[in-house]
Amino acid sequence: MTPPIAFVTRMPGDEEKQWLNVLQQSMPAEHILSFRDLTQEERRLAEIAIVANPDPCDVAALPGISWIHSLWAGVERLVAELGAAAPPIVRLIDPELSRVMAEAVLAWTYYLQREMPAYRKQQVDCRWEPRSYRHPGEMTVGLLGLGVLGKAAAGRLMDAGFQVQSWSGSAATLPGAVHFTGEDGLNTVLSTSDIIVCLLPLTTETRGLLNKHRLGLMPNGASLINFARGAIVDADDLIELLNSRHLDHAVLDVFTQEPLDENSPLWRHPDITVLPHISAPTNAVTAAKIVAQNIETWRRTGKLPVTIDRKRGY
Image 1 (spheres, rainbow, N blue to C red):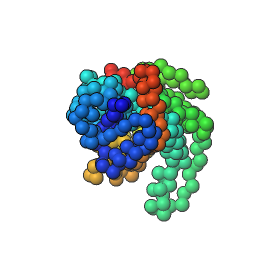
Image 2 (image 1 turned 135 degrees about the vertical axis):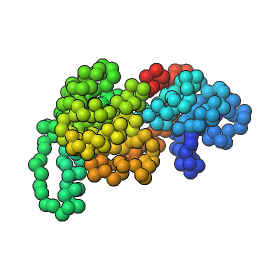
Image 3 (image 1 turned 30 degrees about the vertical axis):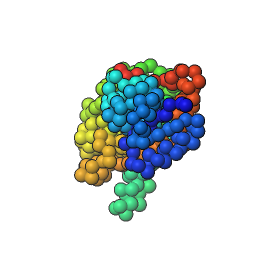
Image 4 (image 1 turned 180 degrees about the horizontal axis):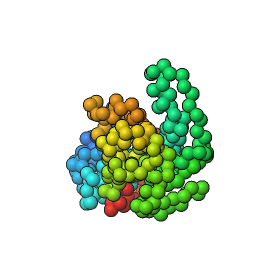
């Protein structure tokens, strides 16, 4: 009999059951059990763990696992909590997730391009004041991060007519746009973009990357969209630059503490749009199919999917 697959999460019970059902439907030949339902012998025999923000102690109680498949695209928390001795980790790479993120980037870029925050303020004050229209072709969007999600977002933005440029920590190609690397390249993208969209992974290099100095390089009246991780942006510095009117608006979907504390000044700032981490929710059905395909390939060939680079953190 094939050894069971351990499903290790910190999800509420009902949510975990829903995921279990979807995963089992995608892999009818596999025996997938919640960690809490595994016997000691099943824990010993398990070769694969499917995880979603697992308790590291639970993962450590699975001595025979060969690899770990995350249900999320972001794995920085997983890497930090499991440590260097953990088995290889595979993160979720789902075309549907990329499509949804690209959709969100385009939607909130339109939100800023069409000056919807300004019109909302005018409505509160009962002011009827049409504003000058800015054509997408007259605006430059700077993408920070050009992985799978970044490339999908760039495509949607360029199709909509925006001028796009990008930056990441390593060389990359983006047909139809200029890509930059290095500190000088980052400074160029920041200083020449009307809207910055952050899709970077959280690493030791990107933590606190968008601080007062770098945000201050952005043109007067520029705006920020952060769909990456909250710790990449220094929130206090961002508020200071918004208060001084150097920056116009920020759309924030990620925070260092989630849910965002009700006393956070970000909630009530007139030039910040707060979203509850909804830019790219994982689709359980498509995610389960990706996981099932990866596991089936490993069972058949012994070949692991692409695993994360622990040194890079993603």
